[in-house]
Image (cartoon, rainbow, N blue to C red; front, side, top):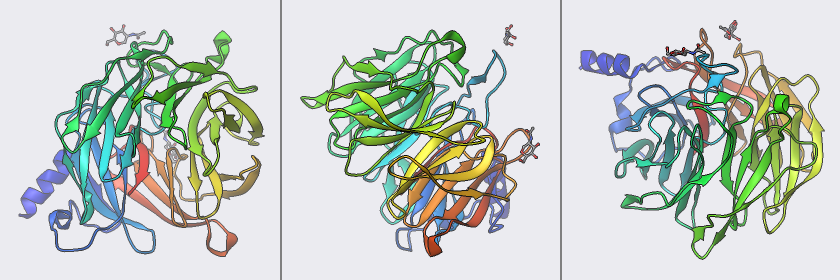
Length: 395
Ligand SMILES: *[C@@H]1O[C@H](CO)[C@@H](O)[C@H](O)[C@H]1NC(C)=O
Ligand SMILES: *[C@@H]1O[C@H](CO)[C@@H](O)[C@H](O)[C@H]1NC(C)=O
């Protein structure tokens, strides 16, 4: 038994340190109530969803490792053959959760995978059907809508653009067609500029919005693409707008009960965009974050009623108020090189740090509410995962 457990751990390259329980088999037992979890993708050659269980106090413990049935792939950083990471995909939302389903991209096999989440244990994921083609290359962001039963994926490689399909308990139908983006990219893409960042549905579900980064050295600005959701499908034709003052729009977080979206711009910080009924974005406020290197990821906390953004090269959590000002700043001393994908739930913000060539992946856990302060509760190291890990969702 020990040997088998150990072999699995080595095979999957995953040993959790904090609880010192390699490949804890309890995740397969069905004798306890549903627990909440965080998920991210390994984006390794054999791609997988890594899930970590959430304790009652919000801290993380051991979880599970579920192969997606597809391949990961990392972009090239600045030049051909220079493997990117952390920020292996130049994107936000490579996986997403709606209802009891998880969707995850496979950037190296140009497919999307779908799983169901066991109601009694959020770390138990079961594939539904086989991965389906994303009709493009290097899929790196996915959006799903809970009422439309629609899922859309963004591709950022030599064949870039958006494809959508319907999902159900039977799985994913074939994608409907590529809505191309003219980036002139390679597969994998050379980033981080001139790549697709994130696709997501607007708060009211009437638009599929996608942030695309410009290429400042070549004088191109980024844009927000919008495809209306119309007659039960995402339109094949859309609009683009380049909100004033933005260059490299990256991760987005919807501000509840509004058409406003907090979007990072890696070149200076973040903006609050107002998105019209027809998907045209205008800059409501622009937020220069002093000393930033690459502010790329965003999440919105309902508990603190504010946004949070992360910088891949600076190990700090920066709060953004609803009117677009810098709020609290928490400089972490946990030794991670920086933070990427964020997820907010309850009083907590979870921040992925994919590590680098020498540092392993970690997830930092911040209480952003208690005592009006930001407190770091934990820095959970995920052994065996390094630099290509991406995404952060909560269930
Ligand atoms: C990148 O790697 C490939 C395969 O090893 C090689 O053929 C190609 O010349 C390399 N390109 C550059 C620009 O180094
Ligand atoms: C990786 O991150 C650690 C911690 O921040 C840092 O000390 C180290 O120099 C980094 N290594 C590389 C190869 O960038």
